[in-house]
Image (cartoon, rainbow, N blue to C red; front, side):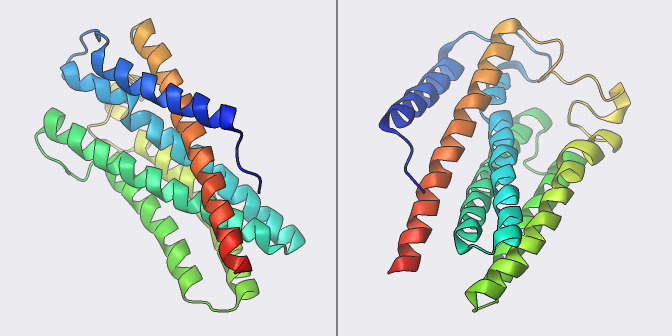
Length: 222
């Protein structure tokens, strides 16, 4: 896999830097309950989107491996899954910090928190499965098959079930599933910043994915 261009690297680095600085310094409109912690919208939410974005690459590469039996696709799938896990963990951590300020506790087993954690366990099992098999082809085959299953589970655990179960997160059934300050009824500046941050973290995830893939390919050669 070829490294991303230097222009992409510079653009991504500057983009993320501007998002962090703007998220910390720009005035933010008042949002009930969230108050100043609403700034975490620019970091917590985009990281979860970056996770979903890069796990799509993992799914696609596992599918390609099952079609072509080329170990390079397995390496790409593993790389994307590892980057996805990284962003999943940072999503959990930033969400826990936000929960402590908003709800007074880091973890309260809210359905969205719990199901997201369950997704991390599902993908964690993917790596455990790979570590338990020594033969590269068999490891790749089992890993690819399980990865397809894990990806199919993701929409239910991240997008569907949290909107059907009662909880503290916005968008729960108590408010009809529509009262989500991240997407509806928010200031235009917040919306622009949020979407810009999603783009920035997705670019960062892709960059990390290419680096991780190249490292695995080099490791396999030596």
